[in-house]
Length: 237
Image (cartoon, rainbow, N blue to C red; front, side, top):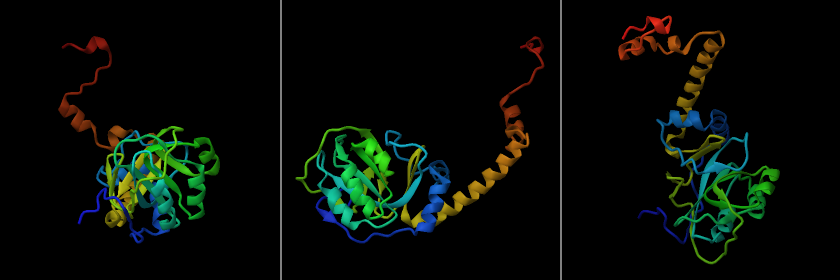
């Protein structure tokens, strides 16, 4: 039975990636992880950080909410572990302020390192002061109720991406990217290789070598018809 967007469930046990690997994901950053994951998993750019200069990588605890109702956040808190990131999506679009400083305080006590949500949040200044990192669709003070069931730890769609409980979620100033749990080791290895390669290229550029030569662009540019002239007067056609 598919659990995608299914309501009324709270799943206790999910797969998780260990903390040392999560720290490597965070250090690599969203752009590198996205490229290393074959340019997959990037959430919609409307999911934006409320803070700057913060990078997070954690295991996804998913929260499916009913529009205007944040009841399931409280269910999710109990199921969280250190290193988790809450990933929240409503069953239909809603930008109400589902999340604020009180829930953040409860999550911090469980070791949760951030929230990614296709929702609105509020108390943004206090959240920044607390050091609780958030990526959300908007900031909006409109409150919510606690009346209708959603689910915790079922697959859902957030920011245009499928997120399964236990997936690795990487978030920084560039946005948010999701890596399936089963591919975490493969993507991380590719990211480390990419970082080493870019470090070597950066050193060559710092020493004055041109990207034209590092990337062997000249033959292809010539093939496309690029021509060099010393002055405009030399151009005859």
